[in-house]
Amino acid sequence: MKSKKATKTNTSRIIFFTIAITYNLILGFYLRGFLVLSPTLQVFYLLSALPTWFLTVKINSKAMRSTVYTSLILIACMNIAYAIYCRRVFPFLALVSLVIVFIYFITFADNAGKDNLLTKIYVLIVFALIIVLLFSAYILVYKQDDIFLTNGQATLWDTDTVELADEICADCDTDEEKVKAIYKWIIHNFEYDYDCSPLIQYFNVRKTLSTRKGICYDFSHLFAALCRSQNIPCYVVDGDKRNNAQYHHTWNRVYFNDSWWNMDVTFDIVQTNTQENLYGFRKIKNAYSLEEYYYITKIY
Image (cartoon, rainbow, N blue to C red; front, side, top):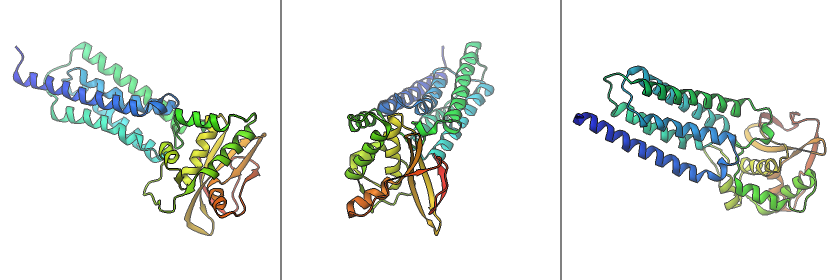
């Protein structure tokens, strides 16, 4: 017969597995509109869900437990790096799932005994899948050549955003017409949020579209999201003013008519409201051209 300790451990494992899988299902449901469009988010979501399956088997040996801990630590490090580099909140939501698994193994797992062969094979397969996903995450976040079309880094959009972009561009035939239609729609439908002073800047497409307010970071990423969803190359550019390093700004560079164009949708939102001259579209040599008034800190 099983001992009371073994029964308690099995019950705890089932409870933790149920909590973790339920959390991941809820998270997946919330992100469903993004997951179908973003390979990057798909990979990080799988990195959130996959460690949960360590809870489906009884892991006794220190070697297997070390494998589990190594997996969790690697995933946590990649999520934190992704959150910092791409200014995304999602990785912190994914860490909740890792914490649940960590708590179980630290608090309830039995350290005695050996693992059977099937358990070893199972754990190593899950570990191998995690390594593949980590490598994929690295490629998607740091090594993509076409980041001007990427969904899932700092610029993230969902299926509703695509439907909106399709609606805005319904009567457009060329990329130039689509870009200018998106630009006009934004500058006439949004206002600058002078009360917003975020500690950490990140782009939330749902919030920006629902409030119709934002700051330069929000507007430039919204413009990029709408353009990229129409397969139009668009960069977001961060910079510091040359004569005032404390003044940070974000704008765009978009590609159409075989040329790159500088444009500042935030400036034009403000100028539209004050009825003053607009920045518009200004042709540049390439996507990485220097700025007259800003030191460019990041192009992404």
